Length: 550
Ligand code: ADP
Ligand code: MG
Image (tube, rainbow, N blue to C red):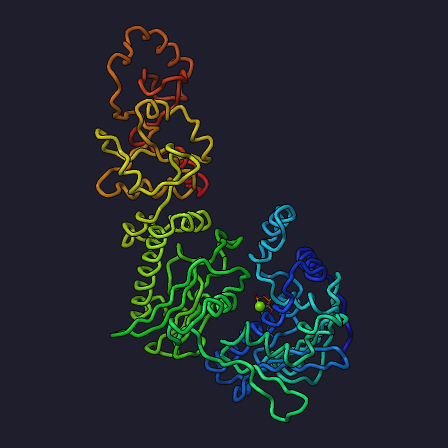
């Protein structure tokens, strides 16, 4: 054993660890699921790496996960012979919360202190640190495939961890938990008891493709605990909701239940299986550029890649799951994937399927749908700008705030059904906040005439509403533009002659700041409002252009 070095956990990592140590979860069993899930990922990566890199000196003949319990020492070891980690990777991956946008994390953290923390961790996936729910000391020894030396990591989870180099260790990773003192009354959660381990693996990790083995005291042959069936290749009728949920958690690294499960088997010219999920909650990084996306690609049951961007468009980046095709060539690379005709076909089918699922949910369970839309609607609307082919299908599932009931969003179809007999356009107002919009003087004439106006307050709204043009033949028209054709009773129309002097005076006072000062019939209680010309970019779009440096 080489020299021992001590490191400090990153601040956010320390906070998460504290939460684990003073465990907020009733259900501590899930630590095993997390360790098995990491081991499974590591085996996937090694198999893939050995396919790509023929030089790699790695034994992939018997890839497996092993559990070894020692009741006398009160330890449990989870071992895999997968890809392993280098010393630097251990520091980066285990010492920090590698994926967190730091500022975002801290602010959510403060917020979560009020709302309860379970929610927060759901968004992060609890991962490796969940070991500290059940252990007061964790030792990890890991050797990266192709490297001679291994790294030993040890921590009690309180502030610091120790790292040293080990000369001879088996390839892969072993994680040894020194379990907290046993609770005599709680035999269901004694993690040195083979029966307990067997039950937990069955419950959470049955579908893991690699064997999860455990030696039991009275037999020589290690038993395989999981049935190893790829869930997506089984008929949907045979799969329980629980099995879907556990699989979702494995692929998504999420903690919560999925909102919707989409299990698709395509037959015919191009065969593939897809098992996709819509999450219940948006990840904290939905709008950050390097957010991890959710669909894994398998070819003939062989894991090819995480985060396969070619399978779904960016605006559906929150969809999680797996696509498995027997018809793709095993040596596809990320670079050529985007051009692959078969991948393009799968992409088209999946977009249709996801949008169709949204449409069904909206029709059958509007309340649940509104929950979905609150989390992901802003992302979906990007599709109105970026995916003209599916624009109509997206317009069908869009929900927007409206003056009719600012607290309850409306669909465009519902809006169209409520249009007044004389109304030919769909009116909208773009701005930054719904409340400011709802109080805008631009709305006065519309309110007076009983005409509903959509209140568009997401940044992306300004873009799509300009590009889309119309819904079902009814053009979108901004309520803030100069000439709005509302049927105003003629007795209210002011006589501009009375105001010539006032208008001239306002014109000189405001000078360059405005193009023109004119009388309007659009106000009922406010004295004045700003409007833009019919062909000017709306203010929100102007701000967006400015933000993009144009
Ligand atoms: P996540 O699995 O969601 O990325 P974890 O906290 O579970 O988060 O793990 C953090 C990272 O540590 C993993 O992404 C992986 O890179 C690395 N890691 C954890 N366990 C193993 C393992 N058994 N073998 C190789 N790498 C591992
Ligand atoms: Mg993990």
